[in-house]
Amino acid sequence: MGTAAFPTFDTEALRQGIEGQSATALLSLYADDAELRVIDRNTQPSHPMIKHGRGEIADMLNDVYSRDMTHKLEQCVIQDDHVAYTESCEYPDGVRVLASSMMALRDGRIVEQTLVQAWDE
Image (cartoon, rainbow, N blue to C red; front, side):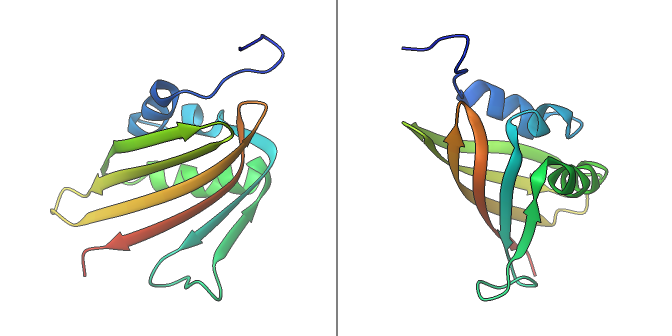
């Protein structure tokens, strides 16, 4: 049962944020105090890149969305206050990136996210 005081998180909002042309819509889904952990070939599990707060997350997302690439939400599962999704990205030269995320929500906003990404080598 949703109320105006506690907005709900939905797949379509996530799709619009991920597949949009800027980071603005995606950034709006994060709480002010959110934490994002990124794990990939350069930031491995023992030393992930961690972004604290919407400002640091915005810097990262603005960098990503400034690149010439497409983003597509592939799958999304929402259960209670948790969201899991996969995203595929492609650069014009055909290099692909696959990302998988697990997120925790508070009041319909992302408060914790762990993102694991693999790039074509």
